[in-house]
Image (cartoon, rainbow, N blue to C red; front, top):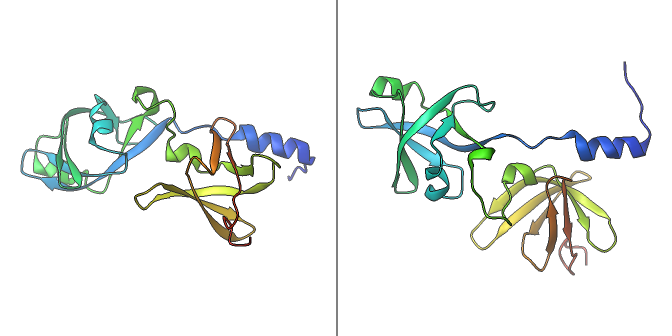
Length: 188
């Protein structure tokens, strides 16, 4: 059965329907390191310091499979991680290709920082007119700043996340307010 809802109710469902993910991806264990159960972890989080704050990580996105973090150290652009109960190369090999998750409640982040998982799905609207330009589908970074990739009417738009453009981010209400500048969408 399909229910048709008035537009004002649909807007309310969109604003309040999504719940922020509790368990966030920190990286993927892509190979073993040595014979004592250490693993090479490709970081999907900001840096090694972020990863080091956790005593427990999870082997699933619901927090049902906790694993104790015994040590973390850098190696080139990866981390070498030692997890509780993984004490042989055979046990480590069973984890190759698996993603590690953290509980957002265990993490300390800067007050003005946002998780990429919370930005994806946010509406991007004009701070002056309220016009919605699209929905964030990805957050990219090529070095100088984050770039929000938007989907709107089948088109892909890119917005640099600089202070002169991004004026407000409210992940709880799933909205990012921007100041549109000339040439931002290649139509001006």
